Structure formats: C-alpha cells, structure tokens
Picture 1 (cartoon, rainbow, N blue to C red):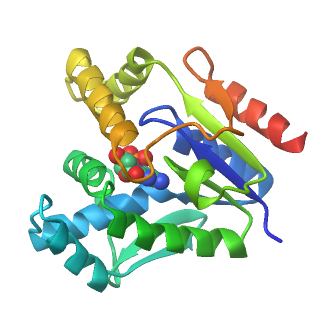
Picture 2 (tube, helix red, strand yellow; picture 1 turned 90 degrees about the vertical axis):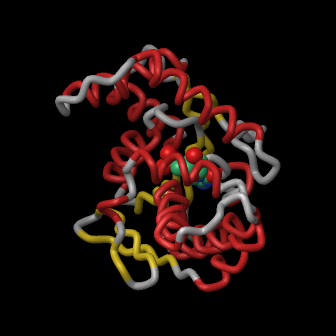
Length: 219
Ligand code: DC
C-alpha cells in the first residue's frame, strides 16, 4: 500500500516549499492540490463563467478535464489537454480559486483525482482539506501555520526580490481575507484535523521545518 503524508494550512505558511523538500528527501511525489483548484479557476476565467451562479459552475464542471503529469519531478497541470502550469500563480487566478473552490461540484471532482493519485503512489500532498477529507488515513498529518504578519512579510520579501513595490499592509489584509474565506466556507473549510500535528513556522527556517517533519514521519 502507498504511504501518504498530508500537509494543510493557510496561504503563505510555506506548505509547498516544505512539502517539495520532504518529497525529495523521501523520494515521494509532491502533489500540489492548490494548483488543481487554480486550474479550475483558469477554466472559469477563460470561459467567462459567472462565478456567483452555481448552476453555471456545475455545467462547466461536467465538461472540464484536469490531469496531472510530472516533468523532471515538477508537477504539470493539464486543463482540457493544455498545459496551464505557467498561469497558475497569477494573482487573479489565486483570487478566483479561493472563490470557486468553495463549490461542492468543484471539490468533488478534484478530491476524486487526488484520492486516485494517493492510492497509487507514495505522496506528500498539500492543501486545505487533505488531512480532514482527502486522506483521512494518512500516515502523517501536519498542520503548518505562521502568523499573518510573518506570512505577509515573506510574500513582501518575495515580491521586492522580483523588483515590485508592494504594500505590506495590503498583503497582510489579502492574507487575512483569504484565511477567512478558506476557513469559513461550508464545504471542507480549512481546519486542523484532530490527529494532525501543529507546526508553527513563524520563527522557524525552511531547513528546520523540513527536518522536524521528516523526524515526525520517521517516528
Ligand atoms: O494553496 P493555493 O494558494 O495554491 O490554493 C488556491 C486556493 O485553492 C485557496 O484559496 C484554497 C483552495 N484550495 C482548497 O480549497 N483546497 C485545497 N486542498 C487546496 C486549495
């Protein structure tokens, strides 16, 4: 049977960086489920779907096909046969994904795909509902978090390094809004599973967090 590690937590806690590192150390596949919700969001953006209309979303869900492939260990997301990986991290896509991931039809479709992958492969999967819904029997569950200040500051530093001039206050507000939406939706809201181990990365570096998770897994 395949081995599974679930990492959940709010936006900007460092889930993907840490999960990628752990996956490399363990020789597991890293599955970024946020990327799947983002690919669905791209579909709605491209189709001009009215995202306040649940029937329109349902109709689109019936048609859309999302596949995951790996190229040199990097996850590629294929939307209706087209590789959309390059568009996933755009701000408008993240904002749309936060809205459309609240719909049950969107979640049902993607959770099914996530379960299929985890049944076949040793995976480390990150998201919001992995420990609570997707992999309730995961071998290890981590809830990775950090203060909104620290998460905003990390994002700020990333953008500054890219030559942008963001507002730290705006970034913190965005993060708090996203947390609120993800934690208060009806369908699979973000929450720590009862059997998940809380890791607060506010005052921890990437190496330290990776080491801690690997230690917990090897126990
Ligand atoms: O982790 P991320 O920023 O790439 O996720 C984009 C959005 O998708 C986020 O606002 C919440 C949603 N999401 C979700 O509802 N469930 C998951 N398992 C992963 C992401």
